[in-house]
Length: 491
Image (cartoon, rainbow, N blue to C red; front, side, top):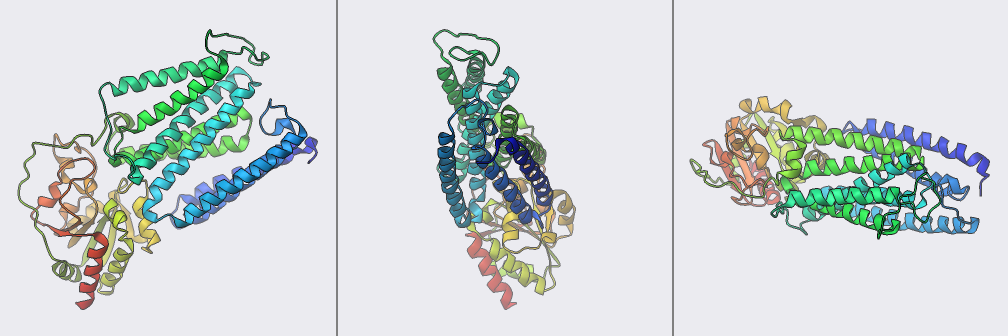
C-alpha cells in the first residue's frame, strides 16, 4: 500500500487531471464533428478517477469514505471486490454498447443514466450510515440520495416505455398528483428523521433526536423506498411525445445527485463531474421544453397524450401515391428537404435515406435535412442516426434555420415524423397549439412516408395529411426508400 502521507496529494492531483479532461470533453461534445473524441476523453477522465479512488481506498480509511473504520486486511479484500465489480460492470456495458442498435440508443441512454442515479443514491446511503460529518454535509447526502433515487426509478420507467415493455401512453389515475406529493413529502420527512435521529451513534451530528418507533435503519430504508416510489410515479404519466425532455431532466437529476454526494464525501472529482452533467442536462431540458413551447411543469404534470383529440372534422382526404411517381417528382426537383422522425428510426431506414440523397445529388438536386429538436426519442436522436449513416453534418439544419426554406422547396419529404410537422399546432384549441413545428406544408409538394393512417404520440389528427399539396406513400420506410432509390436510378 502507498504511504498515507502522500496518498491525499496524489489522489487530489489525479482528480484535478480528471476534472480538466471532463471540461475538455464537454467542449468537444458541443460539436457533432468532435463529439466522439469528447466521449473518449470523458471516459479517460472517469477511468482515472475510478482507478485512483480504488487504489487509495486501501491507503487510508479517510481516503475513500470517512468514518468507516476497517482493518487493512478488509481494505485489501474490498479492493478485490471493487476490481470484480468494475470488471463485471465494464464488461457488460461494453458488450451492450457494441451490440445495441442505433435505434435503441435512447433506451440505453435512459438506463445508463438511471444506473448513475442509483450509484449516487448508494453513495449517499453509505455517507448517512457512516454519519461522521456535520449536519450540513449529511443534509446534502440526504438531498443527493433523494434526487438519485428519483432519477434511478424515473429512468427505469423511461427505459421500459422506450423499449416497448410498458405502455408508452401516459398512465394516469384519479388523485395522482396529490398522491405523488404525499409520497414526496413522506420521503422528505423520513430523510429528516434519518438525519436527526442519532440514537445509537456517537454524537457526530452534535444533537440526538430519538424518534419513537422509528430507528435510523428503518427511517433510512423508508426514505429510499419512498424516493424510488416517487420516481416511478413521477415518470408513469409521461408519454412518448415528451420523452426527449424527460431523458434530459433525469440526466440533470443524476448530475445534481452526484455533485451533492461529492460535497458530502469531499470528493472533488464527483463535485465537478456532477455539476457539469447537472448544468448541461438542465440547459438541454430547458431548450427541449422551449422547442415544444411548453413549461417543465406542463411536461411533468399534464399527462400530454393521455387522451386523443376528438370532434375535429378534417377537410379533404388522404391521397396515396406510388413510388415511381414520387421518384419522378424527386428527380426533376431543384431542392428537396427531408424531415425525419421516429418512424425512420424504427424502420432503420437512415442508410437507405443516405443512398437516396447520394442519387439525388448526382442529379444536381439540392438535398437538405430538417431536424426538429424533439424528433425521435432523445435530444439529437435524428442527428445521431443520420451521422451514423454518413450524412454530412452540413446537410443537417435545425428548425429555425430551415423553416424559411420550405417555401422555395420543390419537395418536402416527411419520413416517419408526425406531431413535429402537424399544422394543427397553429389551430386554436388543439392540444398541440403553440408548439413550434417544421413548416413542411409550405413546400410545393409534400410526400409523407408512413406505415398507415395512425395519429402521433399526442393523439392529434395530422392536418398535413389532408392538404391539397400532400401525397401519402404508404409502407415500411426502409423498403419504401429502397424502392425510390431503384426508381431514381432508372431515370
